[in-house]
Image (cartoon, rainbow, N blue to C red; front, side, top):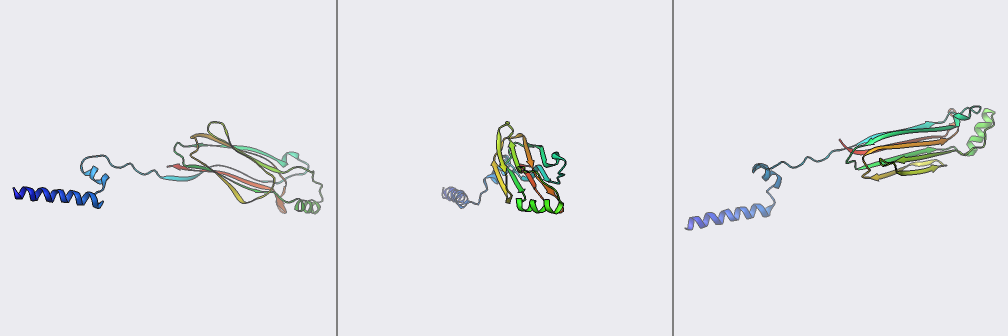
Length: 181
């Protein structure tokens, strides 16, 4: 009877030591005992989904060269962590434009220059809407956590001036996501 008690006490001590010490890996023990493996961790990748960019090159006699309107769309995957809109805008100061018009011997019309950015979510709701009338430095970043999966749209409407050798209004709007690969 003493051997049985000794063996039982040793077994109880071994179980107690292993469970208290943290040496037993629950998932590993499950694998040994025929259980399932732990789920693989989700790997996220940052991806550029949509981009609209423009540097104005205007022709004074062509009013259409002052305007810009474009859209881009992207599909956001289910399980995406975040969606970021990065907006970079350069709008020349009026003093610089006056100098360019004198240098080129042209008269420029007095127009409001701007960049209007809109982002619509997968459900069609407006997620971001802003009009920029001045340069943005450093670029503005807007992050939306856990965006709805489905088609998103990026729209930019802008009016600007540019003479590339001397200076130009410009913008770059990017939509990036962190999505499961």
